[in-house]
Amino acid sequence: MSGRNLLIAVILNFTITIAEFVGGLLSNSLALLSDALHNFGDGVAILVAFIANRISRKESDKRKTFGYKRIEILVAFLNSVFLVAICVFLIYEAFERIRQPESIKGLMMFLIGGIGLVVNFVAVLLLHTDSSRNMNVRAAYLHLLGDTLSSVAVIIGGILIYFLQVWWVDPLITILISLYILKETYRLLKESVNILMQSTPSNIDLELIKNEIEFLPEVMNIHHIHAWNLSENELHFEGHVDLTDDLRISNTDKIRHKIEKILSEKYHINHVTLQMEFGSCDNTNMIHHK
Image (cartoon, rainbow, N blue to C red; front, side, top):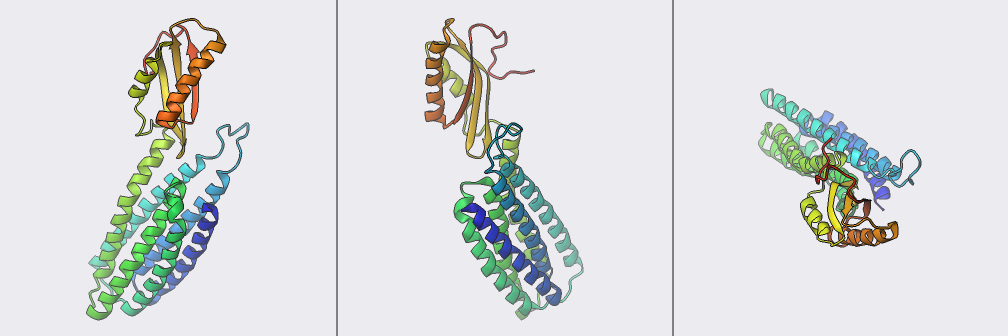
């Protein structure tokens, strides 16, 4: 469902981009022009998100043995960086407009903002459900949420400019919108970087896992532990398990199943790789430092 909704969101986004660009030129509104630029960037970002969503469904192969799932994380990261760049540019332009204010056609700004609000709100609704399950879709959703808030702000600005001729409202709105988007983007950027860097997920306590596995009577210690997200919903774990006795392979399988059950049921780890050993590692630290 997310793929189709992303495509619809792309079409809606580019439609409103054209309307806001024309409206911004005619009304001389920086808020509208900046929102048009923002929408165009968002349209490109959502289009890339759509393509990534399609690619991520490809099966694993000899070259991509882990599959293509992580491409969505990569795109979420790139989208976040792109959002930050757009916001910085818009803030700069807004301060320039504050220094050199220009007259703006508030009524046209209001009308175009109203159209933008309706279109963006529909796009936000399309992606709302999937945004809670997929980081790539969430990045696109944040783009559209920012666009929706921009439209609300443009409408308010248009009303104030039309009735009160307060030109500084236009760049002020641009700055406030940009700051909000920066705030929302930070968490997504941090999360995507952590996955790309194969950081231990925040909900995984390696020390606790180590203690629990070593509580098994057959296990002397577990070391060289790694836990990471391959994608947003796929958690991997690997480690070296030093056994108390020199066992047959068939017996070590029973121990492996016990460990896998602990990791699956308590920590929701769905891919486990264990190397069974008997006193063969000199370095038995939990984390292996090269």
